[in-house]
Length: 415
Image (cartoon, rainbow, N blue to C red; front, side):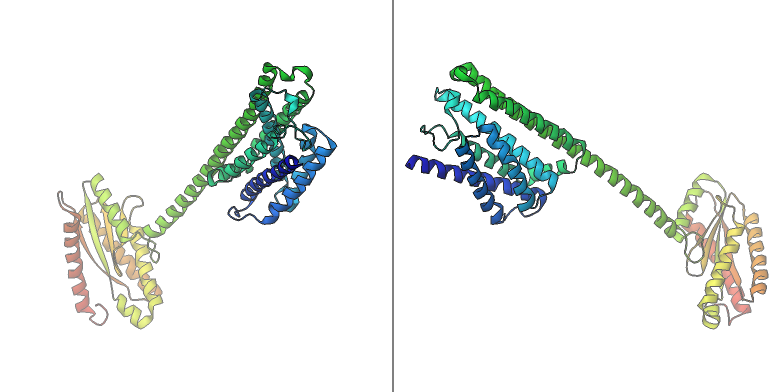
């Protein structure tokens, strides 16, 4: 009686550990509550499965019958007690049966070899008179606990989550589970009906190797499914990253366009304009720079309002852009009321003539919109060997000379 009580206590304790490992794995796969598993996830299933274990022993349903009875019970516990998703609960219940059944058969075959006993001498009956007979049961439960506990660590948990996102990988693994269960059922049937040959060494070795082969086959299938799921996940991430990079490139391109173009006038900004001028100077021998300044912009802002001042700037920018050849000459807003032009491939006479045309057009537009608009400008030929700053300085001096002349004529407007 004492031996039976110890055996029963050992069964229930190892079952408790096994259930704890399974609960930790189940919760960690579906949630982030890995550190503290609720008691109801351990105590209640252990009590239910312990009672079921005793009833199966009393009914003498056999090894395969026991696990087929346990299978739906495990599913119900995972699905409705632990609130695990349906297909995940079914997969975990099936995997538990495969691991448990293969472990029981393995330990029975191993002990039969080591103790030189027939295979049928080992069963899970609590009424067995042989102390060694039920030993494979707690060994199997303990193995299951450590397996589940190992799969609950961070890296393994993440690998299993990759698998749960797969499609055909899960179907492949499900088919592997079914095949493994069928082979284990055949192995269990032969184990329990092998007769007189159950004490022969080659029979025990065949049973042992079959369990190892089935377990390893399933583990390789699981590893393959996880690897393929990880590759599929990484491929999807690469696609998403590429799409994100393309989106960012489009956004940067749009942002670059807004940075390259002055928002108010629609011509190039100072930095972009200088860069375009320097690029053009390397490809052409002749070029003229023209510095343009708006006379009386402050007068317009102070007396007519900033709205009219903005209109002044936009009108001048529009006329300057019209006098430039598209994709060849350069016009940019150099400062608040200053513009810089580059007449690429043009000589000094041509550049001056074009600026006279700009002045005439601006005079006509000023009369049309009744807005006092006058330009001061200076033109300089870019000589060989000169720097950009040197040419710009000569154009600037000429522009200020014209501005001084205009200021003498209308001192109240030009500042």
